[in-house]
Length: 111
Length: 120
Figure 1 (cartoon, rainbow over the protein chains, first blue to last red):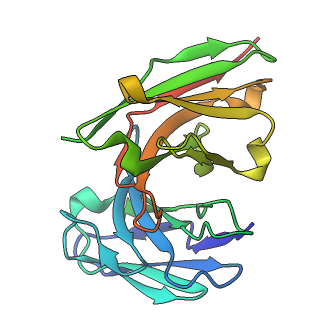
Figure 2: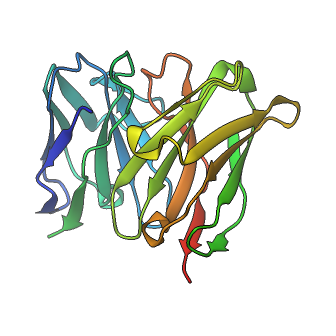
């Protein structure tokens, strides 16, 4: 299985800060990567797919970059509603790879 | 509007099985794969597998092969996930989440989650 390693696992930031989260894949996955935001007690919400494409309705302060094995999610100016846990997920389901694994998550808390 | 509505919370004993349902509405049921993702208390997300509602074909994460079954009933636009031989570490919230058939655009809609508690 392809493994995804997110860093940091936890970060403390202030409203207005620029925040960057990294996701590294154990092997190349082209641009087959998505990012999700999850708040406590809620289902995850899709933010970005195809590594860089913003899902409809998601604010433009969120952006994604990268391809191959290294990817980043950037929040250009952190807002109060952005404090949450963020996950990356690899979407390469072509054989022999069959598992759409998630990264371990990054919790963004208020400084 | 697209909705995925899951069945209610379950409490099961170790060794038992659980079957969770996910009723889809607001879109063409057979055009989207349905996946199951679980989250143990305080832990991250774990992808379990998908079902193609059009063909009934399935694909499971190796960890769950032999223990999970995914089925669908197209007449009522509902998919089911059954997990057998439950253990305490299967205690988790189980989510259904759809993707377009090519999977590459991610899980754009999720169910509300179903808490499954495994305890003696």
